[in-house]
Image 1 (spheres, rainbow, N blue to C red):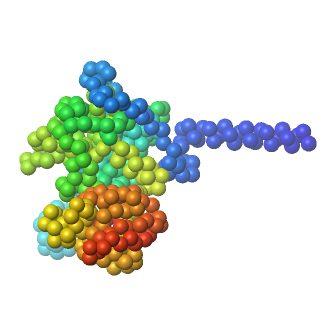
Image 2: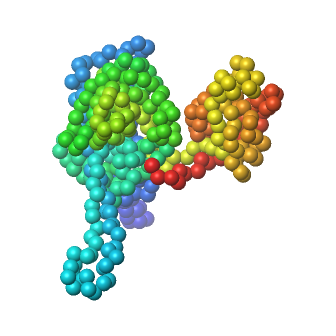
Length: 385
């Protein structure tokens, strides 16, 4: 009996030792290692109201955030069309192998932010969407290959992962919901491939939408210089905490004109968590197109002070059609949340889990109507960016 017990304890000890070694050195070999949803994040404590001044100089903020910002180099194999004279023996006699078409490499660059010491990096979807190979250069000079965990074209966000031994310099998440116009910010990235660069500016505007850049828009606008190559980099506050992922600029000539846009860090965090856990983002959907009410429309519908959005389209066999919503209805609330804009409706429904039943409050021919709608799953976008 003692012999069997000793053999059992030795087997368990060896198994635990092997599991520890694999977990430490090769965690990706474990089941669901990349989809566990358990990610180590650093978050800053919420600031007291009005506390926007840096606790140290801007150089301290830059030095705090810079190690977590990486340069991303992607390459894509582009196959050239076959030469129409490839099989013509007369042309082959004169030109030989010059007629053969060779694959060509197309390379591009961007930036990313290490958000976890486990190796997860946030960047833009458009930085990695066509990449066949991704190489990441850290601020300390190390370079390594990366692979895509998942991406979300509708917010232009993607999560990639690198596998390096030892803890990585992860950024600290700030609180963009506390940001105010006029707050000082730093933009960190790799513009034009010159290397890691820090630029300074202020928050010029908040909650920018209707720009036609993404489906879901809630941008932080800044005049900190953002140029090509900065995409996916960090927008940090005066304490070096992440408040946004740099995404786009307004520029007819490709250079910085002082109008840059960043995706708020809280939006990026929610998207990232779903991508790591599920590989993609799941959103609610009812299948109705809407138009915001102008004063003229509100007057024609005799709505008075009633706010809402006009239903202009109901997709066949969608949750909206099954619930009885009709073109011409005015959607004024979902459950207890008032709806007064297209973007608010889109965000409210997208945040609801598919399968959940909600009450849609509508105005129809001057009468308020409440209909129960079972939220569906938002279809994946099919059109390329």
